Amino acid sequence: MRGRGARWVGGFMPGNGSDGGTQRLFLALWPDETVRCAVAGLARELIPDGRLVPPENLHVTLAFLGDVPGEAMPRVRAVGANLLGSGFALELDWIGCWPRPRISWIAPSYTPALLVQLHCELRRALRKAGFPAPARRFAPHMTLARRSAPHAFHNVTPVVWSIERIALVRSHLEQTGARYEILYEWPLQPRNTRG
Ligand code: 2AM
Image 1: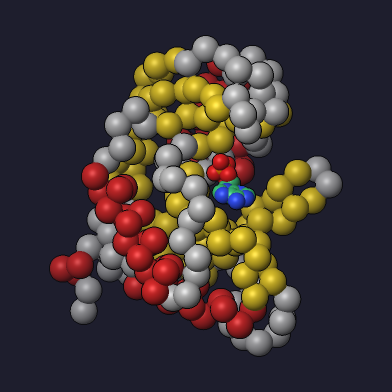
Image 2: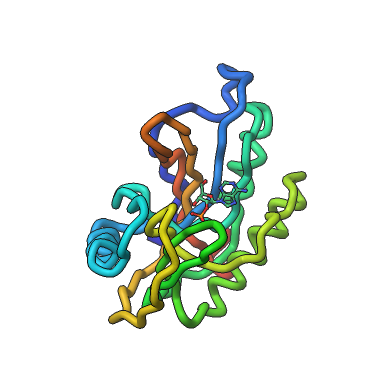
């Protein structure tokens, strides 16, 4: 799927001037069904308590943008559409927790160089487009549960995930928890395939 244009996934049509309000947005790696099922199964098996993230919400955040005004949407879209990066495999093989935010996660024990590069490119592009740099240090992880008590770390058989695109996601904060809506997906495109 390289070298193709963006995939419009639905929802709010950004930048059409129809909504002057803000949207809570983030850029993320969004798993396919196979990865989602494998990870959700591990979470059910290994996370002792807390609120499990529903399988359809599982993702790895690349950059959290917060509340973005409608007029800034064309800049967000330009960042995603022009981002350079190559596809890579991510091996999720390490389950652990952060006691302070009370989060359980699955992560790669080794972060591929192409993911570090992608994140650096994204940071640079966001800064250039006028968005604040991400506040948190980049620690790639997929949150599995919230409000979870500290628990043992586990090495698990890697869930191998082939990353080929990034997603722009809108977060709807609802009474039952967050609901995520993928607004756009862009294929990763290495520099040498750009026209
Ligand atoms: P997480 O990646 O640790 O789960 C949408 O809220 C996503 O953006 C979540 O996955 C969340 O945390 C991540 N995120 C990063 N920075 C955030 C912030 N300052 N506020 C809320 N969510 C943030």
